[in-house]
View (cartoon, rainbow, N blue to C red):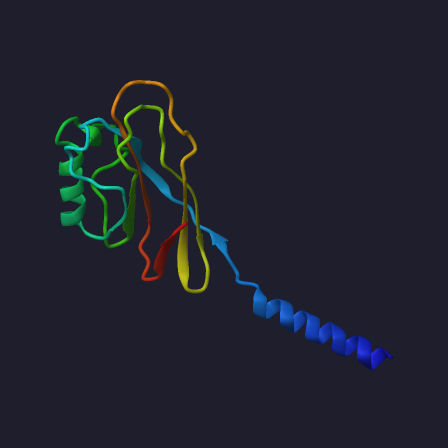
Amino acid sequence: MKKIFTLFIIVFVLGCSKNSTSQMELSFSLIGQDNLYGVGTEGITKSNLIIKDSSSWNNIMAKMNLQNNQTDKFTETSVDFNQYIIVAIFDKVYGNGGHTIDVTSITENESNIIIKVENLSKGALINVVTQPYHIVKILKTDKNIVFE
């Protein structure tokens, strides 16, 4: 009976270890979170962008500044792309205000970086055209980045 119990414990432990994936919460730094107010004239569609170089970063900042100077509100605009990458989330254009797009967590497992994105504020009756964005900086990685 003791051998059967021991065998059961070994099988249970091995089975559990195969099904579990180790995930670690990653820290990220806020660069900017607000709304574009150019009625879509900035030409930025709903998207999840991974920015890995200064040229791409400067291009997206220039688009964001077409109607209003958004980058004045950023915590930083000069990023060391040898150490970091930028994750920029843009939501769709809404016909009313009060919407947000939010990076709520970033986790890492053996093969991926998982970025969880939510709309924590669903809008209000404010009659203004808005396009929410959230931009963060994370440590540079070669892992696949997945958005949820």
